[in-house]
Image (cartoon, rainbow, N blue to C red; front, side, top):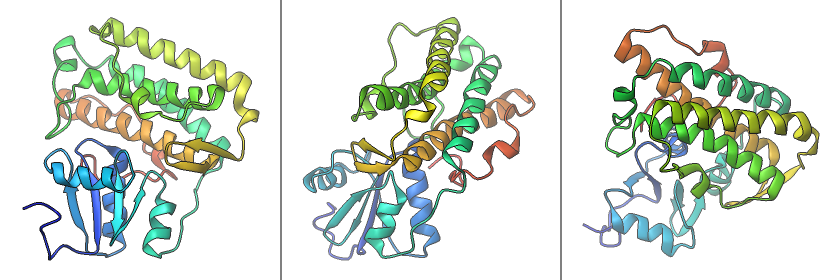
Length: 256
């Protein structure tokens, strides 16, 4: 039954897809508020995604309250929509960037645990995405943030999602991560004091700390997923110390 034809749907809908960290965080946030909501996996429900597009939004995660919709990349926008208290970042911008530094240093160490065969395997339940793609994605998140700060990039999602077709082997991934880390470190040396109070994003003008926090936990969540996979598949030791997760608004669950 299409969403439009369903007369019993609750006032709140959360639109998401498997493997989307921000989607998982949004679902958990609304769950923690104790609110009844409709969970709409847009990969399985074309009508649901069309409803988001018809609202004027271009992507997910999104939240609907009756006939009002917001992107949920910033959960404070969701809080405003639902009429609940906003949250504040637990870490300062400097602390967040230091944490991001460390996570990016850990990712190549994680890569060493995976064979060429393991890198080709799918990583996300109910969605076509390989371990290789996830490693590349982490590098692209950092790249998009630097482009946002230095070149005014607003449409970051295509950059996040881009997997260069020339990246095929483990050596290719190593080179990709090395290039992204070098770019990140170069920006850190010259750009830390140039972050404005607000940044233009595809979901509107946002406080810089929100954008920094989101980028930090986004990379960290995917690194956490890869760390857990390596321990589960290979019996290796964890690469990321638990204290590196402290203060970040990570989802409680690993997958949606």
